[in-house]
Image (tube, rainbow, N blue to C red; front, side):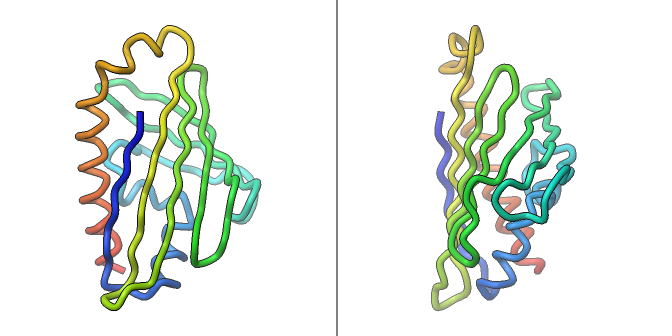
Length: 142
C-alpha cells in the first residue's frame, strides 16, 4: 500500500525542513496521529520516535527510526510493529512560491494482516488526503 502526496507551501525551505524534520510535529498535521514522542537522538539518522495513531477505530503504536537525513533535501523514517512496516519519506525542493514537499508512505503488512490489506485501500487513501490537507495547513501557519 502506497501513498504519495505533494504540497507547496509559501514558506522558505529551511523553515519547512526544520519543522518537518522533527517527527513529533505529526501531531499537528497527521490526522491519525495521537502523539509522537522522541525517545532517543537529536533528529538525525538513528533517532527513534514512538508514534501512537488511530486507524479505523483502533489505536496502534509504531517505533520509527530515522534512516536517512539530508538537510534541506530528504528525510526517511521506518516504523514497525507486529503487524506493519511503514516507510515514510519526505523530500523537499525550493520553488518560486516557497517549498515543495513530497510525502510518500509505504505500508507492508505482516502475518494475517496481509490478507485484509487490499480491503483497506479506500481508508488509506482517505487518510492520505486528510494528511495532505493537514500538512498544507500546518506549513502555511509557519
